[in-house]
Length: 360
Image (cartoon, rainbow, N blue to C red; front, side):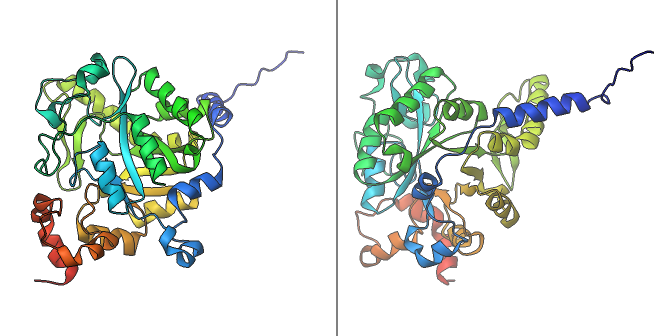
């Protein structure tokens, strides 16, 4: 009697293997109390009504980058002085492995120099460069230096400020440095979350230490374009002069758009940080249904902030503390005093300020 061999339909075997691999390698979630300590109570939950002061609303993006030189100790102090209790900062490594607060690969935008990558330069060569020389408020913030992650963490923990660490770069030094920071500061688990656009980097960090609270960042067209907004769509292409490569990256964008939500669940993130122009009430409720917080970036205009607070009821990352009710209330008596940071920001945001205050 001949034995019949059973074959799965074409593609089903691959799907089952992938499905099994996904759940077998999926990371475990961190302690719920640590998530609650960092992100506060769910804005839609009962606890937020009982303790509204604990609800996280505004997260200072790069330490309120429009008000003070971004990712610097001066920016962190500015936020602390204005009672902002949660700050997002960017981290990347220098050639000698020092973790520094820096968003860009180089220092061209911040300093006007031709340093295109700090990854090829030791810390000692860049530590004394003024990174506030091109900031709108450079007259108020003079001789601003780069800041080490260790110094930033020590200062923020001492002031009981929550932190979102945005990992830039994909080298092992950054990953090892983040893990070392948590190992040497046990209180960091209740005070800091780690986020990244690359889910594989976030996966490596949380696989080595699942107790770390993780968040995944996302925006459309991040492979092919440097910028994106609702009005213009993807713009400023990374390789616009190479149509073949640009087309390949657009294809990668499509795959990314289909899979990033699964990647977030694979990493067992506690939050997602999304470009504000793709966030809707249904998006927020989708993540809330999964027990994951949803925050948007960057929400700078006062009218937008009111919408996020009152309608979406979700936290947002902002480059300025202007328009924050708590901060604005303390400025009432010195609305136009010389010590107010951000005259340029005021000019940019004045139309929205008038609309949100009922003025014509």
